[in-house]
Length: 471
Image 1 (cartoon, helix red, strand yellow):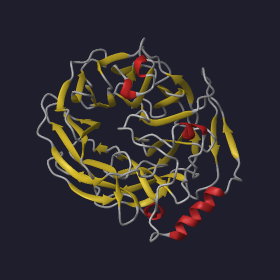
Image 2 (image 1 turned 60 degrees about the horizontal axis):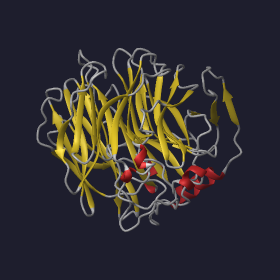
Image 3 (image 1 turned 135 degrees about the vertical axis):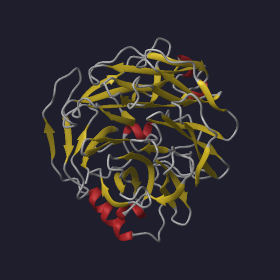
């Protein structure tokens, strides 16, 4: 998502407020840890490629965190909103996509690939953009069961000059890779329409014979869905699932499992967000009436403070089990009693017909900190994992993980993912007024979780990754 597209909301680099009644001792310890900069940095071997492949590892700051490896390694000022996928035919092959800031008001999608399980990374740089559409954003990535990989993003025309409100025509694009992410086809336009095409999300039903791809996004017409049955070479004309009207903010997430397709979206009220779920039981041919997941107060993004309310609306996250019957949804909601945002989660055990929750996601040190940008994943045993950003009183930001082993009824075993807390003060953040993006990446690999996020411990807004073994 472009940092200027959400209804002109102001963005600053001031810290999120945090309630004085919460764990001061924890906050002091975190701030001391974040100030300790004496740790060594280690370079790992490169794997070769067009761009620099050195993986930079920081070994200090947060106790108990896993090894952090730098993914992006180029000369660009900023990398935000990463997504990550694993090649099912080769579990050591990982693909990441994100937004890259080429210069002020020009953001494009780019990719990164690892062939050794995330130890080293090749920075592929920006993806090819179509003529007349220089800007792009909002990347999601996926593989089908045969190892064909896909990246989806939006594109904006030259008239927009980096400002979505000025875009005359926008596109939803998809790129294909047959070599695990080392090279990509030219982009295929899924859709082109007037105005801004917002927040595309990709889902692949790997259990179906034809491996159908589903892409959802929002625009002036409403909430749109397009489907491909031939590995993204062609897409059927999109269907409008929900017509546009006041009060809807189409930042959808799509899930596809065993013929079931789910689309989660938000309805923005004057003081709260209502989360809705559209569900199809026939592979996306028809959708039943939406069900209500729950409501949440609007929360700010990490690194931001409220203007009139609590800042721009957050994004919803969702994940399903391998059968597509157990669905989990999370969002960041402002907790007035705590004085900061809390991440909340809901669960459905019957394919989205009814919902339970919410329950708090954060545990341990994360409870007393501002929580934003939850990202969900479901393991093969049914355990539910949520990664999220936390912000302390000094405005320092880190990444944590919480786990549920009882089907999302409660979350325990909170732990750190990032090995350092970082301060939003890089040139990227100064240029974009504290904007850190809207989401981070999380996926399940055999026996482990793979998390990808953006931070600025190197002085640039870079992508970092970590592997966490499943218990």
